[in-house]
Amino acid sequence: MKLLVVDDEPNVLYSFEKGLSQGHQNLQVLTTETGKDAIRLVKTEKPDAVVLDVRLTDMSGLEVFDSIRDFDCRIPVILVTAYSTTETAINAMKRGAFDYLLKPVDIHQLRNLINNALEVSRLQHIPALFEIENENTESDLIVGRSDTMQDIYKTIGRIASENVTVLILGESGTGKELVARSIFHHSQRNNKPFLAINCAALPESLLESELFGHERGAFTGADRSRIGKFEQAQGGTLFLDEVGDMSLATQAKVLRVLQDGCFERVGGNESIQTDVRIIAATNQDLDNKIAENQFRLDLLYRLNAFTVRMPPLRERIADLPLLIEHLLVKCNQQFNKQIKLISSEAMDLLNTYNWPGNVRELQSVIQYAVIHAVGEVITPDCLPESCRSVATLDDDSESLNKAFAGLSPSIQRLLNSDEPDLYRILQTELDRVMLREVLQYFHGNQVHASQRLGMSRTTLRTKLASLGLNQETSSGCGIPQD
Image 1 (cartoon, rainbow, N blue to C red):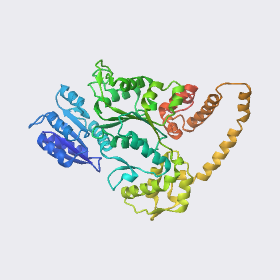
Image 2 (cartoon, helix red, strand yellow):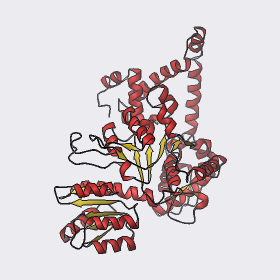
Image 3 (tube, rainbow, N blue to C red):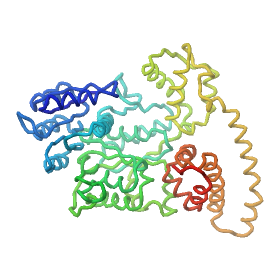
Image 4 (cartoon, one colour):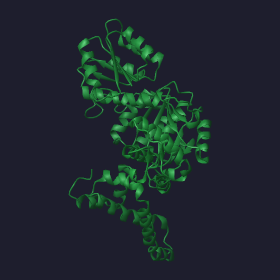
């Protein structure tokens, strides 16, 4: 990937080039001291991101910024200014800058910001294509020829060009982000920004700031105004990943944007208009969350104008050979290997595995197998233990079935007592036993427990609170919950 740094001070350019090259094996850093040369390099080298000083000797940095936006408004531009007044930088961000920093720049902060900018650039410029569209281009592929995947391709084709909100449902690892990017690249907004944010990865206060921005002094640490994703993505597309983990307060603000197209920054009172297409995704059962008063029904109505349901890998196992073939090509290139095929014994194990992590887990399994393969063939001993323990897992499933069969007398008693809401009662008791056992196994570590359970930490904490297990699990363990 390419990064262009523009600054009229040679020592700053030298520091940036040396500091940013470290830790980035595939990053090429281009530098220039003038605005005119920067515009030329943007057009000839097509950098993936730009770090731009606001004041240059030959022309204004904002003029350079406008030229970059005219050429390709999807290139993330990080502005740098040495002046205490940041009004020009804020105005530039309103016009689409990725972010701005004050000099002297913290190199670690800049590195993190550039990493984010490069990822945003990748999502916007590298298309997510259907397998049948690919012609040896650098793209991320949605692979699959099963009837289910064919239906998904048709759905994407029908809705991509329409300016409607889309909700993508599916388990973790099924490829929801790829579908979102495919919709964007086939839309009429594909020459505008595409920004993504994981709603489950940020606490509520930070998520609101990331989405809507904040004014200076809005909260502790808000030493400058900040533009949020709804302003940065003006005219483009905003992908709200794991929208089911969003708090009710943030849901209300997102609902207002969908209804009226306006919002206020955190700590501000100015109403800001935005024109952004929303694509949302979640692995949560939103109907259950609505029943538990954890998700707004009116927001669901706004989000699911069109719905795409991504099937788990176990429901399209016919696509497994094609997916493995595709991943082998990528892994051979990544690890400089020449793996040609998978033995029939190894393939039988992969076919019978349940794939709880879906395509993302399959990718990790193939990477593991390629690294551990000695010759040109992947054999069963090259696979991770989880895939080679299918028989043991089948035995465990049989044991679980016998254990659940022992619940029949209790179910009969509940039926005879005319107890309403039978499913909720049984599900609650099952959750209580299962969550207690899993947390005890991981000594109260909620991060490890949530990963093994296949749910977000937010969902786990909510369930523990509703079952009254928070105090029990934290008091009974000798280490923090996180």
